[in-house]
Image (cartoon, rainbow, N blue to C red; front, side, top):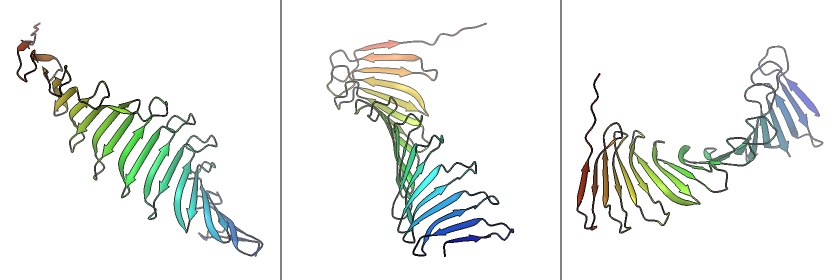
Length: 246
């Protein structure tokens, strides 16, 4: 057999076309899986084994997804979202055909800038190179329920700021290492997603010696300073809210 045509949905028109190699083994198929006589899936075979699939998922005539197959399982998808002929997204699958990693070029400039990692088919971590310098600038961590629990902001590959979130993805705490030396100098404390207090270590001894408290409008209402660094405030400055009337 050299070729074959089938009408798989029995509408009177062929929607499956197969080509066989010199040994009579399947080499290529073209299928219309959605619309009558409109090819949207092409499969390629070597020695009768499937190794590549091209798909037009949105039916616009452009085959934007290329899947590589091994042992009848998808191992990677290459996706050309902007249809410029170059893949801007790569999705890797594990042996169970569950998503393991997704790498993408979010602005289509030819450089990969987002890496997504999955565990048990759930998003566990996202890394981003936001300034396109080749270094990861932001790392998002997710719990087993797929909820955001921590964000790390980086500078030259070192952690600058870490934000922590509760089970509702509302910020509860921030920690800043301004010098990127591995020591936290500033702590940001939140209540119901609103900044309430900032604690700062100004002498580098690992303990806060400056405290600032904020109201619901993010205005400073109290500032305390430990002048001799004994852990006890020596100076307090209160800011009374200003009331305005009509």
